[in-house]
Image (cartoon, rainbow, N blue to C red):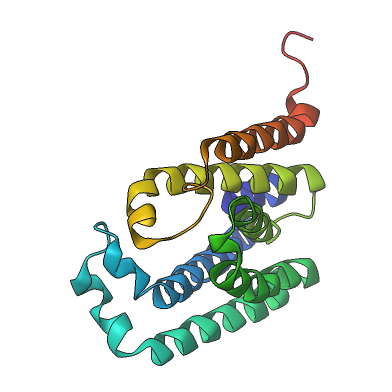
Length: 195
């Protein structure tokens, strides 16, 4: 969504390429960090192959340092190429991602909010428009809620608490809040159908 937003708002190939490059590095670093943090717990997830985790198990400090260095480099590049707002948004992921991994990932509802904030931070590489940032947060939160529901059985087996493993009434409330947030974000742009 960050690249689409950059293309839509700036219509400048250099800006679009800068947003794409920074977003790609940030996403790779975010996922690497989370994979290193979850390397032991992932042994209980049948979707996570041991062969793919061997390097993370053998050299976790190296990979954590690589993820941190990539995030710092991407935040500096965002600041230099895209401006202070984009740089601050990229730098915010240095706080949001560890908070997600250490705390929010295991608190139903909070995991969705933090992942939504991370999605908004990525889109803030390209825009500071509140409606688009709220839309990005809602869409990212919905994507995360869906993914945790798909991983429900593996997460329950591993003892992981998340929005996907929460009791049904809480899961329904999370989906209701996400849907309402998406509607609130989309309404200014789309309005009422047929109006």
